[in-house]
Image (tube, rainbow over all chains, first blue to last red; front, side, top):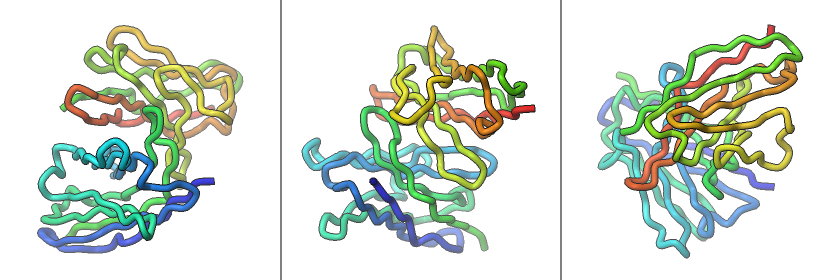
Length: 119
Length: 108
């Protein structure tokens, strides 16, 4: 059974930084496509970023609103996915989920971690 | 960017058929997923590649696409189906993933 546990959310001021983590079990994240998806009450679900598996080149993709500010990465030794978020804006306030991505669907989801950007 | 539009709410009586539509430019030509999210829980995929069901998803859930529209159909709707439903499209030319705004299904 796949388990994804996000952590690292919290309150941060506009312009600040935060790093989210997603500890995985039951899946080798190096061999999986992994994503971050966020959810706000007003805008529903929004895809944030993806990293491909090692065998597919580990390339990354980002949604337009976060490109240049967020960075997705992973630590194989810890089987953990990360999302480095810089230059945070109030509109980045959301619950952030990590997900696996197989066969063109988001299969497994964590419970989410809340990020609040506010002065 | 790519826009996917869903109605904010749909109501259905128990045992009846609920249909939730999703629209977007040439949506029928893209791989489409549907997710169910119950209150306080993370989303769960119920339809992928337009009309496939992951293992464990009841047969009463089905998906279809045509032209600019994707439809989630729930036959014999149960009270436990009350949830928010999101459609999602994959864009592969310039990779992106786009969700609709979600539809709240109320089983009256």
